[in-house]
Image (tube, rainbow, N blue to C red; front, side, top):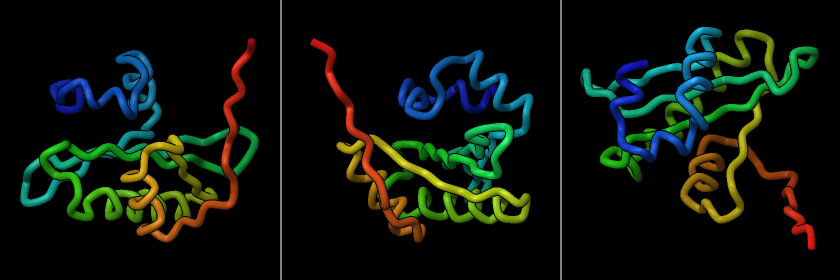
Length: 121
C-alpha cells in the first residue's frame, strides 16, 4: 500500500480514497506491476456484484511509463486472472478519456454500451 500511496495525486484516478485502497488490498483485489524491478503501475479486479461472476478491471500506469503499452499488458494480466478465477471481465472509462479507451481496445475489449449522464435541472 505504501508503494501505491507514494505516487503522485494521479493515483486517485483509480482509487477514490485511502480507505478504499486499504479495503481493496485487504480483499486481494489490487495487483502491483514491475518492469525490470521498477514499479510501473497497478491494477484491480473488482466483482461488480457479489452474486454475479462479472468483474471490472481497473488500471493505473505511472505517468512516466504511459504511452508504451504497459496499460494494455496490465489489463491482459488482469483479464487472465479473472478468467482463471471464473469471472467474466469487463472494463470501461470516462467518455473523454481517449487514452484509456485506446488501451482497453488494444487489450481486446470491444465497446458495446455507453453510459449517459443526465443533469438534473
